[in-house]
Image (tube, rainbow, N blue to C red; front, side, top):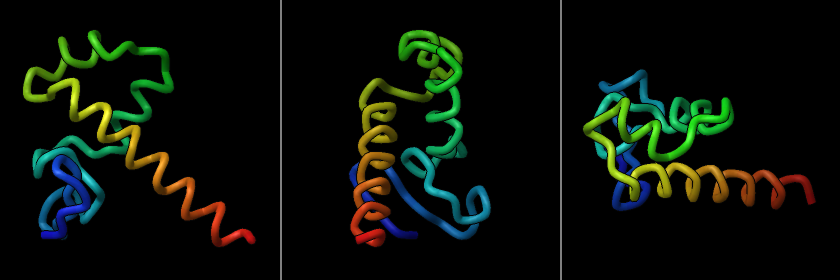
Length: 75
């Protein structure tokens, strides 16, 4: 298992190796899709009781970090 941050992990045995929240089966991608669809943080937390607000912030930070890497590769 790879620890990308305090809350984001990658394990080939969980969700086909996609980055997930705290080793749970909540892919970062899913959290970002929910936010992108207009769901608020409180709505997500109400639907997914295992998650914490810091998990959602970690997903956003992970996305931001990925975008920074993409920008660096384009230069």
